[in-house]
Amino acid sequence: MVVVVATIKSVSFYTQKDGQQLIYTPFREDTETVGQRALNSILNATIMISVIVVMTLVLVLLYKYRCYKVIHAWLFFSSLLLLFFFSFIYLGEVFKTYNVAMDYFTLAVIIWNFGVVGMICIHWKGPLRLQQAYLIMISALMALVFIKYLPEWTAWLILAVISVYDLLAVLCPKGPLRILVETAQERNEPMFPGLIYSSTMVWLVGMADNGETRNNSSSSSSSPPPQQESHGDFALEDDGGFTNEWVGQQEQRLGPIQSTDESRREIQQMASARPPPPDDDEERGVKLGLGDFIFYSMLVGKASATASGDWNTTLACFVAILIGLCLTLLLLAIFKKALPALPISITFGLVFYFATDNLVRPFMDQLANHQFYI
Amino acid sequence: MNLERIPNEEKLSLCRKYYLGGFAFLPFLWLVNCVWFFKEAFVKPAYTEQPQIKTYVKRSALGLLLWVTVLTTWICIFQHFRAQWGEVADYISFTIPLGTP
Image (cartoon, rainbow over all chains, first blue to last red; front, side, top):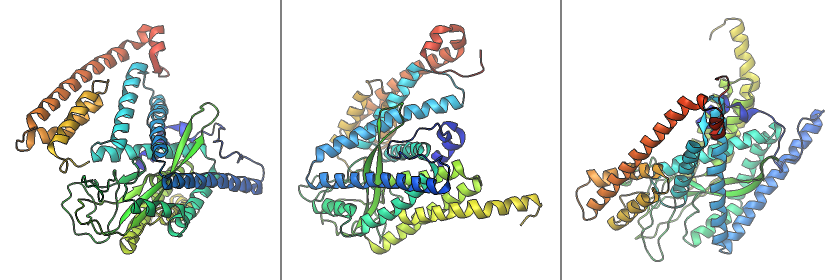
């Protein structure tokens, strides 16, 4: 989130409205009347959400029918796109902002290194910290793209609706994400790489049936005597529940200049309580879906980009999201089930944003005007 | 990935793969290799595969140093002489700073 805020503040590229919109939000927001704007943004949001839902369903279906290759190829391709193309654009803009000259050769080396090592870390084996760092970076890139390309009201509406959808999809018995997690559990399989962020390493011991591999998932466990983990921030125990966050992906088309697709991930946080197989040598950490990161960052980024209250609002949103996250983890510890990570934090974040923007800001201004210090 | 948990042969093979991979213009990979396997190679008590891991780490460090020197020299040259080279410099520039001649 810090990265996103810093970028928004310094690189004006991401806040310029150059008129391009994603193809999934065909309705413009600079219309005449408020009513029309509201209608358009609702339509936009509906379209986006339905795309997300469809993609999630497709993903669940693919998973159910064991079309693993398709899923892996999809994930591979989208992380490739993110790592190379978006970081290329990002670097270009950063250099332009700081007025630094850069030649193609050095740039090529940098991007090539960054991308390839990123692919290796995420999809194959790599040090845990590096993998976490990469996942955070691509989430930030994603959030930045969203902030730039989604019009105002649509973005806020989408955030709100996504959290509701998250809630439904994870907790309802028929929700796609729930189905996904349960299927994954039944088959004793790991979650896909590149979708989940974990705070500790999860290990697979080469057992025939019982082994589970998870690539960097952090799962929080509820009752935690600390294990002999050298990495985890959270102390975890094997028979605690683990949270999986599920990411659904979505394709979006960028503006007319680029004919590339961008994938969007939606992540759900899920935990399922399951006693570990007795001879399984597993550590569980806290698992958070990448989509959660993306939406948190998007919220804070939008707050810093468009708020009239500037730093106050941004800080308030930041704090709100962190509080929401702590609450969610607490609930996770209590319930030991898969939980959606978005609703609580996003709700807090939105409430704080609008409240701070509209109430606190004028208040502080008046105080400053009258030189009245509290 | 927790290095503690994997057997030594796998550590060796991982180190080796990272080392070989670095030859594809990937000094960053060599850097990761050095940092990650440093403890394994130099701090841990000896085990059978350790000497080989040590060689790989040392060679990765060497390659990394080489790349860093090459890149730094090139960047210095470029930044210094960019304005003087005129058209050629513009051609290979990705971003051109505003305001400087």
